[in-house]
Every structure is written in structure tokens, then in C-alpha cells.
Length: 390
Image (cartoon, rainbow, N blue to C red; front, side, top):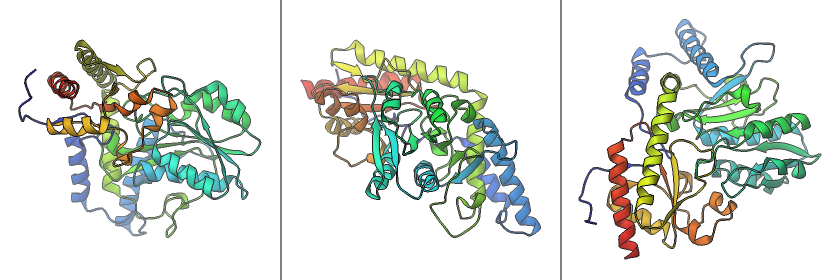
């Protein structure tokens, strides 16, 4: 195979961040042009901004399946992004449960923005246990009862894994948690804007999301919280958002996140089918050659846009750099773990052979990915792998 020429870059790292839709950019810009005042101000201009903010919050809550009726309506708390949402969920819900530390349970395939807060709770006297997964990276629901204790305060399990795209049986876990009176949080940051997500149907008590994962603006996310769940703030200095998240709400970014979510909901079935077809085309293209590849978690229910591919016997970090030279952007794992030399916790939890774990790369597609880019990416990847093997 001939060496690829210096051609246009092919971006296959949409799980890290997605290009912002032009309609979202325009919605944010128009909001800035309107010159809205601080929503917390009591004058007329401030109240006008407050009304726009709350209208956007209600519209977004409706799209996400929150229940805003009754004496204790659900809350949608705007944050700076997914990491803050996860931290607010874990620290805030843990602090509200008991003054004495107890047990917290997370899955073995969580993102670092859940793992690290949980480990911090461990350092402050909490007990941390993990719920294992099967060979396809799917959480073993049947094992939850065995590790639940009388002092279990909180459970957090991702809705869709960031590394292999495996969709987790969160609603089944939530049923068990509800019967035991234990609150459950789900990190839905990779799921919202890729698959339908309904907060109340899932049965969880808190759910995290981030706008830049579904073509919204960077710097804005949210935490959905059931109305009857007690949660404490992790920042102080203001009384905005039910005293849970102080600071002036960024109205333009909120409008941008709502716009992105509305656009996705408008054509999500077509979008899902398009991405799944491209992913299947990508995996089939790699398998046609003799470069010895396997798709990790292929038999699990997956996000339509994620393909975690193992090139057995090769070093993923070296492959990543070589692919970057031929302008194929992918990743070894989550962007938040960039620079880390540790092997993927997700792939290790699946108990895959070390040579598979060391040789695995994540390719994640998006709304801007084309069929021509997929075919060209396959050509470039096969060329690079053949050079390494040959």
C-alpha cells in the first residue's frame, strides 16, 4: 500500500469533544447580542434574563424527561461541564446522606471524573467498592446485591462507557437501589445526544451531562436531580440554583446547550442510524485486510459512534502518534486521561489479555463524519499498521 499523502485531517475523536453546530454558534452569538443582564438582578432587565433562563431550563428538562410537577419537582442544575456535574453528584449526595462515612459503590468502568472523587471519599473515611463487568464491558447487575451493605450511601454507574461505548443496564440497577433505599447517580455524559435518555424512565436519582459532547458549547453542563433527593453544594459564594451551584448562570451557554439538544432530538433516529452504519463500515473495512484487528466490546449494546479497536502486539501510544502523522485523530482513552501511561481501566476490568489492552485505540465518530472519511481513515490506518508489522 502506498504511503498516504499529506491530506485533510480526519477527526475520529468525537467522544473527547464535538464540533459545535453552526446553529448553536448563532444562538449563542444572538444571546450575547441581546445583552442580557445578570439573571440574579432584581431590576426589570435582570428579571427578563431570569425568565429566559428559566424557560430554557424547563425546555431542557422536558427533553431530558425530568418531572417538574408536584410539590417536589426535579431540578436541573447548570454547571461548568461534565466533571463538575459528577463531582457535585458524588460529593453533594454523599455529604447529604450521613455525617458518618459509609460505603460508596461505582462500576469498574467509570470515567476518571467519577473514579477520582470516589477515591477522594475513600481517603476521608469512606469505603469504596467496585461493581465488576463481563468480557464485553457490561456491568454485572446480579452482583450488586452481594456488595450492597447496610451502610451503602451512594451508587454511581455510567450510562454509556466512554472507552468502548458499552451501554449499561442502569435502569435495572436503579430498581435494586430503589428497593434498598440507596440513591443512584449515572454519568450520562457520553450518552446524552447519542441515544435517547429519559431521566425518570431510567429511575435514577441524579444524572450528569455536558453540552460539548453533543455539538453544544464548551463550558456548560448540567446535573439532573430528583426532587426528593437531598444534595449539598460543593462551592459557596452565592444562592443561585436552589443554593446548589453559586455563580452567575451563563445564559448564552445555556441557550447554546438547549439549541444543541433540540437539534439532536429533531433528527436523532436518522442520526443514530447514520452513525451506526458508518461505525459498521469502519470496522468491516479494517477487518477486510490482514492486519489482525479485534473490536473490544463488540457484542455489547453500544453507542452508535464508538469503535474500540485492538491491534494485538502493537503499542497504542506509538500507533496514536503514527496515525497523527497521517492526520487521523483518535485516542488511547478519555481526553481527561491524556498523558497518562496507565492502561485503560475499562479494558483491564474486562480482563482482556495485556497485549490487547496495550494495543487498543478508540475511534469515535460524529455528525460531521462522512462515508468518504471513513474509507480514507481505513486506508491510512491499514497503511500505518502494515508499516509497524512489516
